[in-house]
Amino acid sequence: MKHVWNIVMLLVIVTQIVPVAYGERVDGIAALVNKKVITFSQVEAAKEQILAQEGFSVEDDEAARREKVIVFLIEKELVRQRAEELGVLVTSDELDAALNDISQRNNFVSDDQLKAAVNQEGRTWDEFLEDIREQIKVAKLMSREVRSQVQVSDDEIKSYYDEHADDFVQAPESAHIRQILLKVAPGATEAEIQAVEAQALTILQELRSGADFTTMAAQFSEHPSAQSGGELGTFTKGELAAPFDQAFAMNAGEISEPVRSDQGFHLIYVEEKIGGEQASYEKAAGLIQRKLFEERSNARYKKWTDELKQRAYIEIK
Image (cartoon, rainbow, N blue to C red; front, side):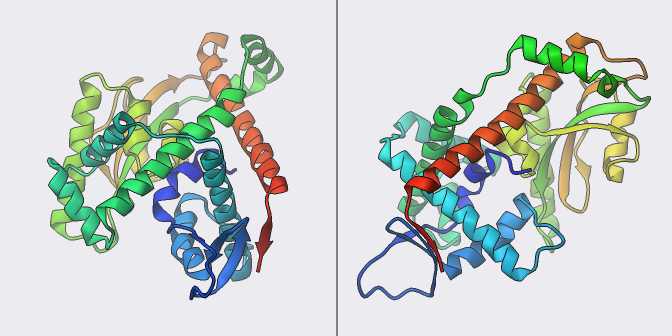
């Protein structure tokens, strides 16, 4: 299922969509969104990152994958234009907070280190700042036009609990798990691996000092579950990859040391250990609220973007 916040998370990896200009040389137009062009090179640049975040069906051929990426970029551009239309602004405090988060995430101790990293990517500092502003604008817009429109009442939670009683019979050796994943790039050097592990240990220290896991996951995790506070769900032993088996030796509320996998380093949080009895309403209510909120947010997002598409001029080449 497509999550509402993926469009925000992916903004930084998508090259900027450019306006139509007479006589401008482009590499090929994949789509038009009002007066903006999406080029084939932008589609190719975004495809691998979107694959990592969203995934494709095994039945999709190359043409189907390309079309899905184009549709994603169209939605991204429509959201950007909507933020511009409504005059969504970014304060200096919001920008500073975002830059501080990025520096902490990458263990940068000075602005010069961050600027050097940006330059190594072939981007100017001004381009980077504009990207961050766009991300903040979209996050604020999504909160305003999607998230704020979704409500889940206590009565609805109780009704769901009563109507799905069998869903809350707890199997033995089950655990409700969240994670923070810090990725290690394929072919990374030993020094690069150690740097990622050191970052994981720094985050772990903050968590054990009282930082909220869901907030830290949203800020630092490089897994799609970051948008839901690292939420993976409830599993029995063996359902997840081997590194997660140690969750079943942990108590509820505990956070693991960094666990290495082929993806990187995981911090595993056991939010709840579940026995074989039926979960009480009090225990299930939070899970139900998150489930209903996510489902309704996704539905609201689709309706909202459909409305944006209906009002726009869109042409896929």
